[in-house]
Length: 320
Image (cartoon, rainbow, N blue to C red; front, side, top):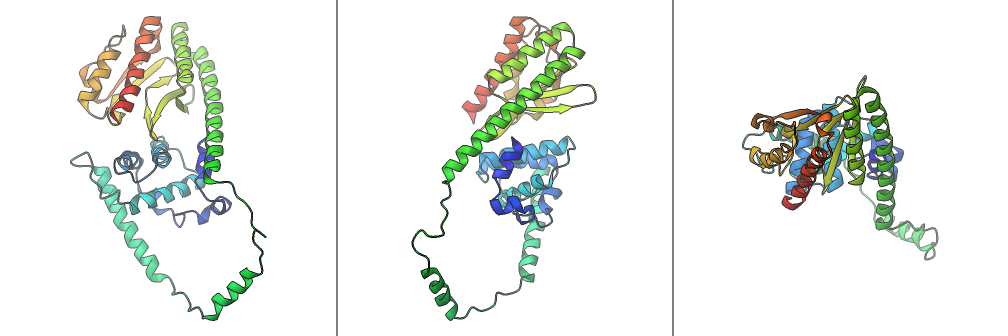
């Protein structure tokens, strides 16, 4: 899915030759910003409306890949570079931040200044364009007058039709990838987890499909980690991290607005603590809570767990 959507972001000329993509010259921005700064930029871009939903999601995902120490492809770097240029030109570095002291914003400001200095140097090195004689336009007009109306013109589909085709293709790719990942996860869960863990884990995977959530997955040596992701207005919100060895993590400290502070997470903690066996202490709300899938083997407990995250998604929509 991501590959196709990323390719659709480039023009046909840029798809044929990625070196002509925006910012491909050296790819300076994408390699100077840390993964955490990229993820913070995605959130900040929403507040000042610098980037559209897809661009914010793409920047956030590239930050996630950086945290996981995944190497970006050349096309991913080129696309990311073009989006970063747009963000910096839109003033994202100097825009107000919700935090009083933010290292990510300080990093953005430093890189933005270097970027501006580099742009000025490149402009200074450019040769002036040669003067065009007055006769040249007349020659061009003469050449154009030889064409009859409509001759030699190719009708291209409208932007709306291209967007619809792109969205349909991306959606189909996402569904197929999700089926493959969840099937692999279920098989691994059956081999490595207990009967109770397997039962709860399978029901959660069906819930992921029923709610049409996006999915992130990571394969380690002997286990698979899947993360259902709720996407609202282009911003991804990971819900929890489920391991095929029966572990489940709720990473409170990584939650984005409106659950980016202690008080807003307390209600989610209270709802999750209704699950028998879940004992989420106040200090967990500032970091993460690790539980076991067997705690969700009972149908009532599983329902309480899933309803807590359904409430979490509805709050994101209501408070955004």
